[in-house]
Image 1 (tube, rainbow, N blue to C red):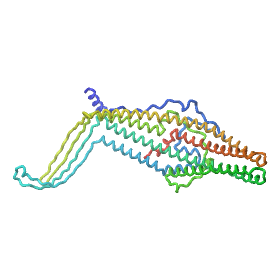
Image 2 (cartoon, one colour):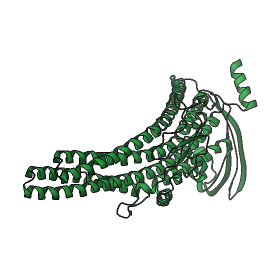
Image 3 (spheres, helix red, strand yellow):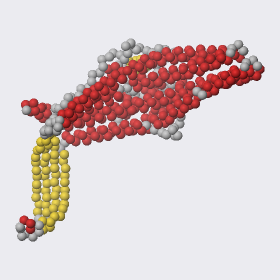
Image 4 (cartoon, rainbow, N blue to C red):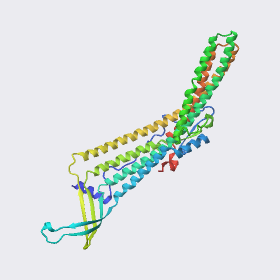
Length: 476
């Protein structure tokens, strides 16, 4: 009884609420993302990417690629993407639900009016008064107010506020992922086009080899099997084109959907990898700041907040509930009118619910524990993504440098062997081998350049995407 009285005094006097108060999780104390300090990536083709710790992340980070056509495509996606519209509408819905939730802190006032015609017959009571018919008019108002003694309603509103926060960050995450997906699709499309161009260049060489082979076979200097082998290599290389063209079409269809258009109405952009400029200065947020700017981490934090508040809701449900009510009205007939009023208080206390209320509170506690574990998992995943991207950019530079050298060497070897073959001092097997190596080296180089660009995009995304520098990204 003393504990109950103390709790009641605390609730009424200090306005406290049952259940644990939410405290924002501590930010990690790590000094870096990898076991080794990351200063800069390796240099490739004269380009070195510097990581500038603490540099701000622009909300329009894709503009660092300095491609006006890309900027226009992203702007179109931000204006017309239905996914963003849905996220904004959901945020507005949650905001309205929160505003509605605040209504519980105010008295509930209702008015009622009625009119009826009634027959009064006193005969059954033994009275000889004749029956009468009259009109009855009633006008009344009622007021009820639930006193939030234990703070359960406050915890409920706290949950609604956390839901608004979660959706706000979900909208920010949708903004970041939309821009990243658009940029990735445009870069991928340019890479596929570069692979097609490289393959077509090799096809021109192979067709010339087939022509020369036929001349030599007619002259009797090489067997006709040489021509057949060259034709087989030509057909095999031509078979590389349809899959690449299909990938370009798929990227175009994806871009159409992201920009809120149908594939039939979407005009395929014709960008080349050379249209993108690799940014040399890349921002790198400190680890303690990462958890305050990544949308997925902030969503997990908001969900943890809501789960924590739900413990208070479940706890308050186990305690007595006090409601004050009052009413005032007037009614009248053709013979006169009268006033009536009422005032009262009611207490509803749970006595026996088969243990369900206690189990519901235990379930709320475990839901909070699960949300806390999910939050830690999200944070670990965020750090993993940043670390992978930083290492990836370093490896990408090494890969571009190596593939550039391999492509140049393979091209020189192919041209030399072709000249030797034309002079009759090289075999067709040597030519086929050189052609194959050049095709593979050229395509690998294109893929390495595209991967470096896409990993640059991935770094911006892994660091949060700069949505906090775009206020419209979180507005409903």
